[in-house]
Image (cartoon, rainbow, N blue to C red; front, top):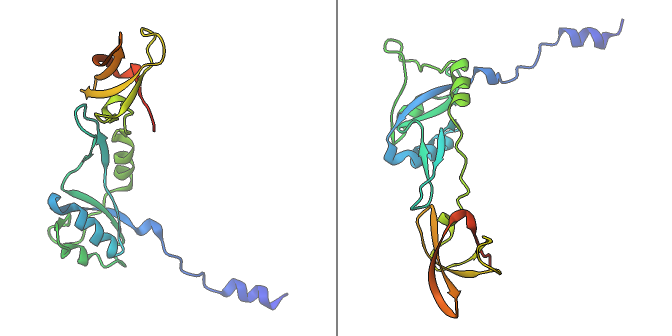
Length: 187
């Protein structure tokens, strides 16, 4: 019998970090300081997750919104990570904890997975006209006009776009089209 085989069997297994021990917890934060809190939480060595979506707007640029404003989800192990630092982080109001033991309450894995699957993902919408700035050039794609007409964007309301076209020898005639009939001219 080989002595190295015996020794290998008696060696203790190397202790690897157990990623399953890191659980998600809920921080209540000041919404005015959410950017600062995220930066400080990352600097402390914690991972966070923020449920966000893009809300389209016909009159302005799409804005980023949060499903749970005032709350941030932070991953840590209660036994090994210094989670007490989170409570004293500027902008953090509180950490969800037991009333008696004051230990953080983790989110159950099934609930966490359900949250991530149930919340609808709203990708950025590709609205043609709402992103064409006034004063830039756009091309009409519709077959109502003969040829390839280009003009200056005069107005855009999210559904329709008004271009200044050259029609019957006159320049900058205001003409309104649906957004789907117009494309931006890249220069």
